[in-house]
Amino acid sequence: MHLSQIKDFVSSVAVTITILQFLSGILVCKQYVVNRTTAEASPLPFICGVMSAALWILYGLTKHDNKIVFVNVIGVTLMFAYTAVFYIFTFKKSSVLKQIFAMVAFIIFTLGYVSVEDDNELLLGRLGLLACSFTLLTIASPLSKLFYVLKVKCTECLPFPMILMSFFVSATWFLYGLIEEDVYITTPNFIGGTLAVLQLSLFLIFPSKPHGLTKSLLV
Image (cartoon, rainbow, N blue to C red; front, top):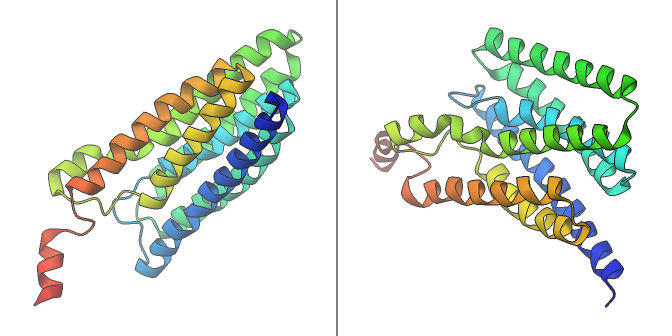
């Protein structure tokens, strides 16, 4: 099998798994709808997801990589929808709204920079660095609740489906980055895969429901 065939296969798998990862947010939002609240969950996985996908779209357009553009157009659409659902059911509306405004302002600023930058190589490097950073923030954002998880000894506030899919996505895009010899793809996905494993280990250590709630259900 030629390298180009391997590349096409890996990229197709990466795109498919990434779309499944984006769709896993439906399971998280479904829980918000059922409970009528987001409880102590953080909006950062969704907000960082919007910014990350938007930056990868710009990176893909600059690099002329249709796979990256296609998957992240789907990603930015779904992540924005999830952010809207989160806003509807959160009791911290004012805090979430500030984060949404900051997200929109950042995207507008970045679009403005892209429109005036003439050096394509410099633009690609800066977009790649930004996309890397926000990809890592997206993957690591559930860690913002790490101290809360350790305090209550419960993983209820962590989005398990999204974290699990993050691991598979990071693994496949890391392999694609190796084939492409693109450090902006390999670096965040290697670190991202490691962070995802760390977060998944919390589900092995702590239960998904508080002990008090578990006991009350057994009575």
